[in-house]
Image 1: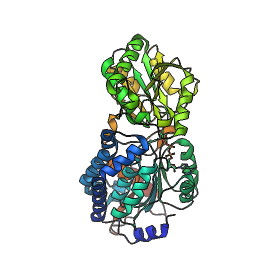
Image 2: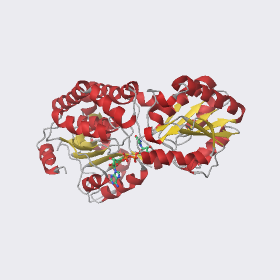
Image 3: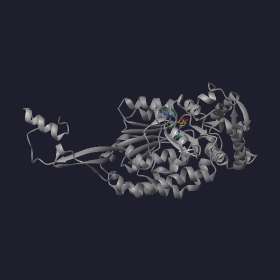
Image 4: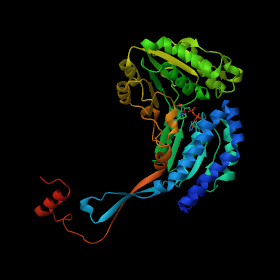
Length: 455
Ligand code: NAD
């Protein structure tokens, strides 16, 4: 178990404050990713059957871009930001100073076991914190490799990796941290928040939920189908922001289902089981959970599976009732239910009847429809594509309501791991009398005038 006193002492010594230290650590993390790229890709392959191209685009390459973006902007982000001074406090100056929080805890999830652990770490280091990181036990090869590599690269007195299961995570949560950043499901999210409340520790919860994709009749059906297929079956559907269910307008329903079948065939061929470009399900328990959903509707495509290899083909499910488990729970796998809607209004009603999703996708060429969908609450939205907003480090990433709280990526990660401290500096002279008692009619008038509240 991590002894936090070492990390606390290191933080108190001020070692993490200079930008030079932060840059050095980020550079070392970059070096780790470069030096051990093949081993990391092999671990991801072992845990999730991740094709090398996906390991690059969604894990290693993502992190390289994240670090580069952070290094490029770090000095600007960390500078005190001057803000206007109210008349009442003249002469003087006000500024916002980002301040590191202290020792933070990062709990990663298994589906992108590198990215979801190390991207928050990039932000934590950039903001000048010490960190304890815990990879998910469900991606054991990646966790074991990181446990070996992290101490070889990053400062041991400031960054500690702890591996283990829920019991280890619970023990960690018994300690006081200055921030907890958790990625995973909402059940554990509640446990994390309860534990954090003991010390009034702020939390970021990156959760999941059911992310809908709406396909309207005026969409480019072929491109929409291909982009839905890509976003859904990347990592065998185990992506928090993958389209969880489709709402397709009546007029193009048949055409879209056909286009989706063609897109799957084009992307993965007809022997998906042997296709190295298609990942596998994380473990037997999740595989069985997914199999249970098949009886919730009619399998319109796919359905092939092999428990021994944890293979589960891209599967389209139609005729699912709104009350069925597949339409109530987050699927987090390669099954995609397709629901027919009469029009956009019906689709919006269906979405708004559920908890606010992590992502919302809309496929349409109509600006008016986009404007209507923009009114719907969601963690993120993307029109005429899926997942691509993740590529933009200038956008915040995080859920709302049941899909999470807080945000990160780029500057938003930096502020998540910083206290944005308000600082006002004044001089002792002049020291006019009007704000001090004893209050008089004149003082009151002057005060009202200066604060813009004069009658
Ligand atoms: P998981 O099982 O990997 O758990 C996440 C972390 O919580 C792990 O480090 C684990 O050790 C820890 N944990 C497990 N049980 C615990 C307990 N009782 N007490 C304390 N800690 C405990 O992840 P999961 O929950 O299976 O992940 C899947 C969910 O995560 C899905 O809902 C998905 O949508 C969501 N997710 C969200 C994001 C996002 O960025 N918003 C990304 C990936 C996954």
